[in-house]
Length: 92
Image (cartoon, rainbow, N blue to C red; front, side):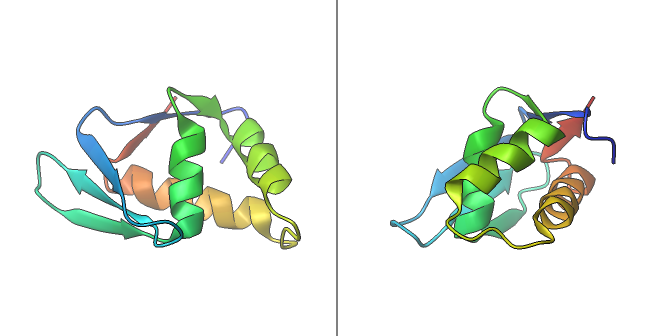
């Protein structure tokens, strides 16, 4: 995936954060499917906001972690691609 791809939340997805450090849940309004997010997924969802480029998202996640893993970019990209396949995100 190109680093300049713009990521946006789907208007058909609703997010609810669980208790602190417990992650969150996404609901796809059309399918009724729930998707659990761990704490990292919840962080990424929050950073996407109204839209961001993949490279900006990866760098922001990196700044939030005390010891970011070497494969951070690949992990974030895989997460974004997974949510996109489930129609929870759109990629421009």
